[in-house]
Length: 364
Image (tube, rainbow, N blue to C red; front, side, top):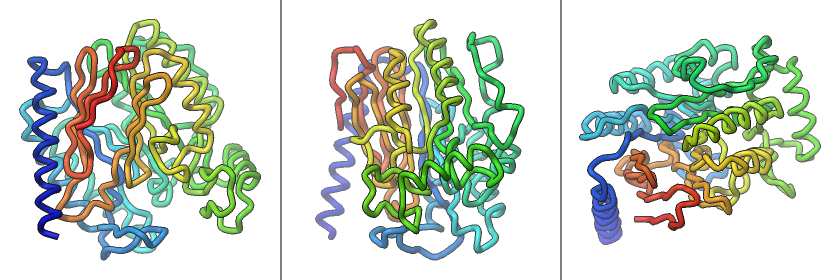
């Protein structure tokens, strides 16, 4: 065990040295930002995952978040923001009646950083809270969206009249020529929707058509394993909005990173973790040349792929299944021709050249 630990430690040092060398190719990046996924904090003892194959460290996830915050705070180039990719607290808070307390503890640590957190909503957000609650909570980071007028978008705002049918998505530009687009992968869902809403009815019908199992969280015998209850999808209205934002970014020659809780490329995740209509979402992103990356959580094992269009798909490892002696977060540095991920612990470091750049992705 000691030899294995030393080998892992040595490899980590080598990875960090490689990233540092890569980052020194230019004097400094345009900007940087932090990334963390699936914290799933709960004040309960360790336990196994749904499949009884992996340990989950519920209390220690708060400690790992504290360490990440401290490291981001001491970086020589301070991150402009942090992407929190969803599942911030665990569903086990519900029977304990500790959802509000646990969320407050996590947010208190994040607020020590004094820089913005952009929050994605995952399935555990909807286990703990109603959509209306989330819209009125600190997990709604949409107020950080760009001022109206910075992009000319033909947006369909018809559904904003109904809280029951609305989706949670927005975009922002932290630096000229770059845009970040957060999407709602539980727009179509049976866990994130009021049972009286139109989208709940549509979602339940679709799920039962695709999944005949009594337990809708079971993928047993399914041709399309992603059609389980703990996943969701993107509605046609949201897809139209995504295309509108990306079309406007194309006109301005912006590089765009899209962020959602659920992965959308099969080579970047286990099939059971994909968004229901991942092919439609992927097709939309691939049709816009400005999209350079898609970041997701949900699959705690993490993953990476670059698709046929050159979009980098990174699924970030989950903090919840990271042993106490390790870590799982990263900082991304944005350059003219590439983005460089400085991973910590289980998150690998990578140099990711933008699509159409003629270079392959370089893993450290």
